Image 1: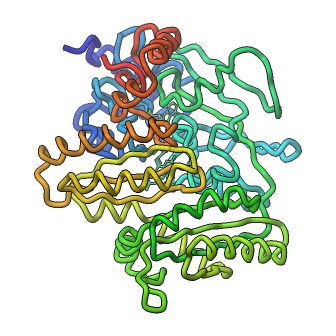
Image 2 (image 1 turned 90 degrees about the horizontal axis):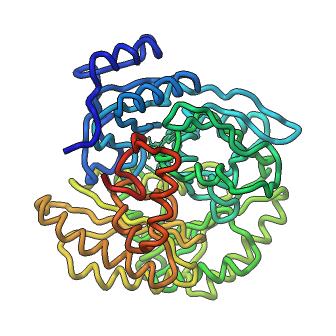
Length: 473
Ligand SMILES: Cc1cc2nc3c(=O)[nH]c(=O)nc-3n(C[C@H](O)[C@H](O)[C@H](O)COP(=O)(O)OP(=O)(O)OC[C@H]3O[C@@H](n4cnc5c(N)ncnc54)[C@H](O)[C@@H]3O)c2cc1C
């Protein structure tokens, strides 16, 4: 039995007064609000959806729900992959998509102030018009920046520039009590007590609702160039990664892809981009690498040195994508992997581990070996440069129950091995409620007790995104 109250007509009326015209209930609620992009972690309909526009509205909604003991689930674009935005206990979904204003640029300090519901793609395009780059580049460009900050999203460019956390200077966040907090400051360093800002970043909507953020920008590199290294052997392909990383060449992105998933993506896009064979040998794995810089000639030297490293490590050939169209095609195929997998299978589960870069080869071999014990298909790719691997179990024609039983055993082994190799449960997607048990096993009881203690201080009544990250109800 839930320890929460239902949304009463009285609460609904109070919400409607606080947020006029943007409160929806019962049949007015779109089914999309019951799940994110990974339905295997369950669906649950909220009793009300509130589309907020301002920090004051967020504060009013939280204060009311706290008073009525009704759970609130913050939601951005719902593109999460761990069930984080699923309203497990009903209650209110607080949607930020209408908080979509880019508020102001500070071109002297290279920062931008945005509302939480601004889409990553919109900021990227707007910043580019001014010769600026917002470096974090998660695969889903139509996620909100508030969602990115709340999950500490990573993405393709994390290998050179770091993850979202590294670009958040300050946020406005609302506590479950309705109190508004300003965390951080637009400064380049700080040593000013416990970093509540960094506690809020990556807390997946369990500690507070982020309403505005000050993000760091950089001057956009003038040139980028991509290369594709072709391998017959998957082992040679992944073994190249640590060599490239210690070469000092600083790739902006370094992705590893297997033959099967590349073919799947090409079929999905109805466009063939990557060669399948080279001089009679079948290509079984690819490295897709991007470099950026200010000078085209210097960049060509970098590409030449990277090519030598890859060829010495066993690559059969190197293709250089030096025109905008070639680069676009190569990255379009890579960016469509998840959609291609989703289109190809009924049910899907995912593991987003991160391991030390020099353990990738061993980890990939382990996954190949255990995959043989199960009836489902396993597809893998990853941000190889930072050791972040995405492993997908695809049910194909399996019965859902049998798939779920088998996948549980597979995931347990996959997570245990990642931790044994010095890795972590999630490199970028977060814990939500899909990965909570694996986090508990990996972090251990003391760390979990600290996390639940922190949650209790921010949210004594446990109304904010209950059942996620560290505490089942
Ligand atoms: C095709 C595809 C590719 C992807 N590629 C990547 C990738 O490369 N790297 C990566 O890291 N992720 C990736 N993702 C996952 C997803 O896009 C990210 O997790 C993203 O950060 C989620 O943002 P969102 O706006 O969709 O948040 P939602 O899914 O709506 O919410 C995610 C979590 O954040 C919380 N939340 C959202 N907004 C707020 C807020 N304002 N305040 C407090 N809490 C909030 C929610 O409660 C939930 O727990 C991918 C997803 C897809 C579908």
